[in-house]
Image 1: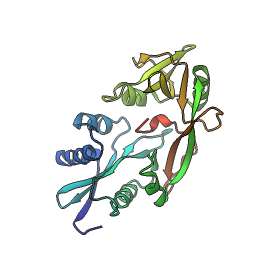
Image 2: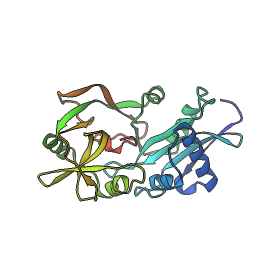
Image 3: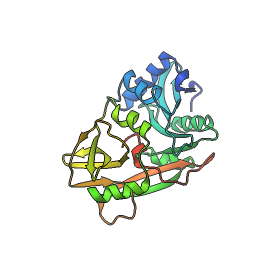
Length: 253
């Protein structure tokens, strides 16, 4: 990596207005339409779990890459999910990904770290010692079967569900009800929904009545969607988590 490249690491509450603008510039360059400061504030500043960690790489004063370790606790355990990782075109393949990830991990000594990578970032995480916690095919469920399976897995925390899904400014979520029980859904395509988990209260979401549902939380199901797999990786250098972690915590769920 060139000597002109510098990397900073900040908590959300420590970011300057310029650093937020720099992060948004990188994100929207790598992921057109990622969003504006309203989206950034909802995701990070209004996070009920507290501060996230943000890593920004600069070539002199030009922002060229960013990554966030999104505060996303599990079972009352301090935890961070690596998300919004991107390096702008022209700077890829220079070790910036590795340097940013290392900086973020070093700043979170003692926390549990995990991520739901896409096919592009997964090899990079694995090469840095992150390990596979779960590799699960996408499975098909009836509504009643999904409710039973997710009840056994536990409910979505109430405060998290309000912030993450009901107040989400960019994505619409749905609910399906059966026998007085509601489950969180996200729409994949017409009449096709993926399950997030069991809701403990009415969040005011639009109700739908699908015939079947998709999930990648249960590996033992017989009915699967060919060539579709959900991945979850974890970094166990500081801490481990032995319990079930629902896919609804994925940033891209």
